[in-house]
Length: 212
Image 1 (cartoon, rainbow, N blue to C red):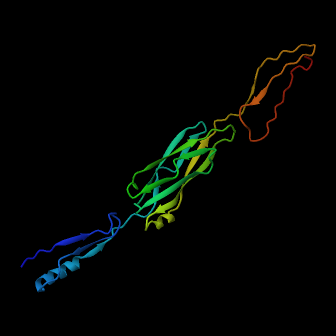
Image 2 (cartoon, rainbow, N blue to C red):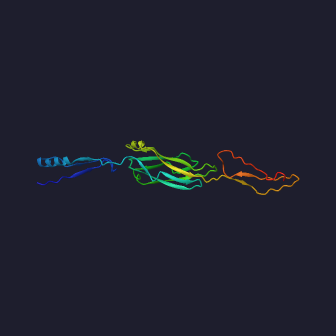
């Protein structure tokens, strides 16, 4: 005789990567029903699909900027959902060459797979320092969630930033004509460097005719 069996679905967590259990709520009563319940009991299991490991992905690992203030962006997104939240700090090794914003940033269970954008900006200076390379580090600094401690084991990632120099070596005279007389009058010319050097600069002024 065919008999029907009702099923009760018990979810331990709404996160698709957390465990959940299926079980029958049909009680044993009588030999026939007991046999069906035994079959159903064999069908009872706990299911835990393989979750992706904790981690995060950057859209790129290198950026090229100019000291004139050009910008570029890098996106960051989690590889797996946390049960609570994960907070990142993004730090430039040399804020005199490149700055980053925003920082810190956080991901939650609700937005873990929505990329967030970090803006990199070149910083102007007056030093002739050539092309500079700076590391920007992405690191996890805080987590909030009962089973999120594994996020602290996620290694840092870095973006290498190349900043090209916009300063050119040179000097400027405030005028190119000086007027003096043989009676001994004087005139002055002011000379200034166009950029800050890394070491002392010596200029030599030579008269083509010392008799004049």
